[in-house]
Image (cartoon, rainbow, N blue to C red; front, top):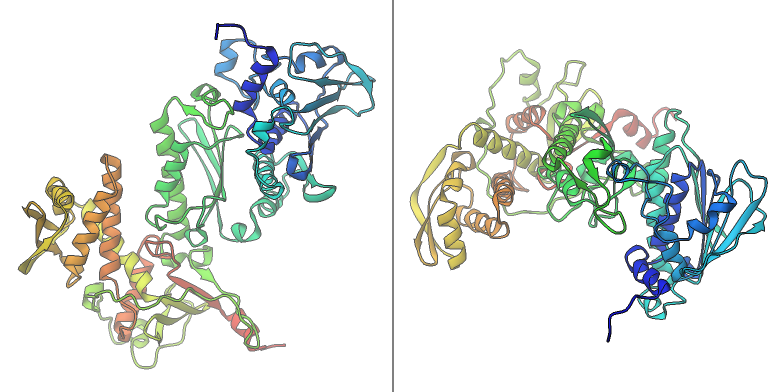
Length: 596
């Protein structure tokens, strides 16, 4: 086949393959155009999930009659005019390809009226080089873009679309995301004539921003959300992150924006993930709505055809800023157990008359070894006259204003939960989850202080492993020694364990070694090995934590409560499960109908 210049419509259809994947892609491009036009209100109407009709109406600046044909011309835009402008672009759209590309695979009608013109005009685009002639049309100031029969001109592409319900879900996701990017704009979404979502503009009044967050992300997210706001090094990070207890099985509640542009950026997502590492199981996903603002010259927004990804000129600086900001926010929210009045723990609203209601998650028997005692909690017996001494007697003292935040132990429930009394009411502690966090933080402190103390085994243990695992043990022997694990290769497929961290006592050494080697095998590279070492510390803490079914004395229970008060992120175990809940007196009174 000889070389020849492609037909203009075919060029636009090829370009559409980069810009228009499905109806949701069209919704994104058109809504972003509305925002760039200064709209205060945007309405999206869909039929058949957007397959039959996509109509986006706004009250922005509008387009003058003489410029309407140019709006449908390829590479025509009002948003940049030079390379310098491209390097500091602040608008959402700027390529000048969206409208002609969409027109090449659908029937597109553009109707607009500029604020200084008394008459609106409309043009219909076909995605070719023919210049459409504007015709008068009724329309208030602003713009409406109507897209009918998407991919009707490219039947092969239409075959790849999903069901109406699936395409609607994708379009809704885009609509919600853009609605989160601009709180000052009102948004409305309709489907097949039925209103699905109406979001009034946020005026700045107290609680209005949270109301939009609740409407888009759900009230459950809002109830578990921590506000983030930090500025440094020419960057500002704001938004909301959910506590680890609200983690998700899928990454379906993650909204990130850079200079108000919706993005899916791997560096940004990695920084968020790292901030949650110590409190979230690696199979769970955090939920968040985050806005990063920085100098536009420090961001390359022209890195992806659909503008879904960006590149940062100082990527390490951005990564560290996001990570440290969120890590600090999680620490502030869940730092010490004494912060329960600020959301560190979980308050429970008890039902009345035995109706089913929320309760802490039940932890089954874990079969884990435990080597702790009151002494290994660093417990010091108080003077006989102190409140703590009274609390550890067979009849604990009643709570008072000077009662510690986690209170004093009353007893155990089914060998799993500790019941304690504090000034606010009743506290229930999952003793394994709480102890797991305490041990994990101790292990981290020992490692940061220069290495963990080792406890040599009376009899070295020899384990048969794979050759790959034996090689990993040999390669990372020094790293493991720093963790208090003396492990050496003693054969092609054999390792020998000679010491464990003294803090772990009689933990299952063989099981720990196999977990350690499994974590190392799953990771590679310096950063991944560091993450693997964090996983190893978590495994150590989990294996040595108090097992379900163990009976504790009052001294041991109170020692655990005191340690929780001094432990960072004590509100959750290493896997993100809550470690304690608060049931206040008001909830108990409602349960027993006192005062009614």
